[in-house]
Figure 1: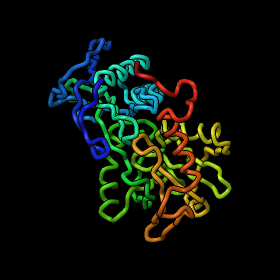
Figure 2: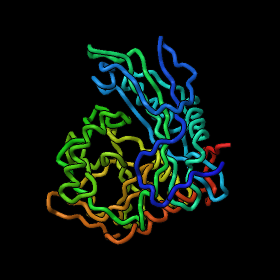
Figure 3: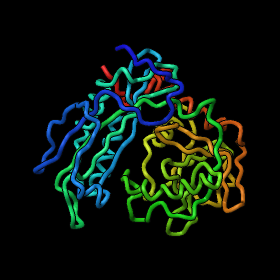
Figure 4: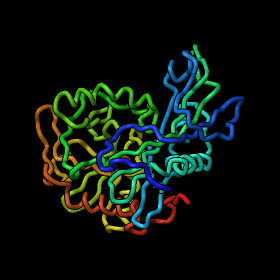
Length: 341
């Protein structure tokens, strides 16, 4: 299919409407078959559960053009499984894993002209989401839901290379110990908006959230998991029941162990340990890895030896290997790549 005439390298990371999106409705205890539609609007009651009680969740993944010219999606089954966990926690009906993957594939197929060409640095971002759609005035789950998938082309997250960022220790809590930090609920992101804007107003790129119970352990940022590299080249990832299980982080752990022969520790990470790490990064779908150069703890700076100029050498190997797998330059583990035929 002929690609849209777009300046792929400069389209930015923002929403652009594409031709089709997938929509399925849940009524009377069952999901319908779902359809592809050109209509990008949603009409719901002013009293819809999503508007009153924030009963909504979402996922994020990408479609890529590989070196061989194939269009592929990276590990969509894990996004489907994570949305299943989220729905169960929010008392929402689960959209079946197999149908989730099929809906994502259908939506990408219908928007192939918007999948950026290989080498452009751009990708097709895919956003599956679900919300309670019927009117609910008492505090209870909705009876009807809508599941949708839309796509939007996005430019390279880093223009001119991934420069290390500066983050701050946040005074706000991201998630309660037995709350909803481990699921991808819209409400988690709503409460993070003030802290991230406040960080930006004070000259920082992101927040580092500590555990709410003791404020001694590293958790995550508002939208990404942390990874750390020790001075003897081990990969360390924070462990907590309040952290969203990042698909990118899980993939990097596998890459570290099976492609780079690194030792990996998934454990609680105490804030006092930060000064002992060689490298730090934030991992997620959008950027894969964002390198962190320093952490500001209320005026006290913790600077990583990797510095503020470039991604650390071990982090760079992890980044290059995972993006090489995604782009088809490196052979992928079985089941990681879904090819759009």
